[in-house]
Image 1 (cartoon, rainbow, N blue to C red):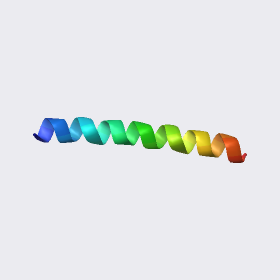
Image 2: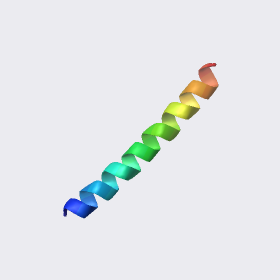
Image 3: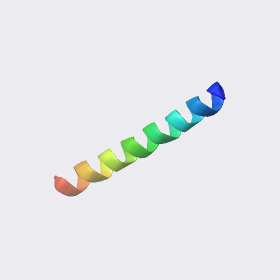
Length: 28
C-alpha cells in the first residue's frame, strides 16, 4: 500500500512538472 502511494505520488509529481513546463513555455 505504501509503495503504491509512493508510485502514485511520483507520477503526480511528474505530471505536475510537465504541466508547469508547458504552461511556462506557452505563456513566455
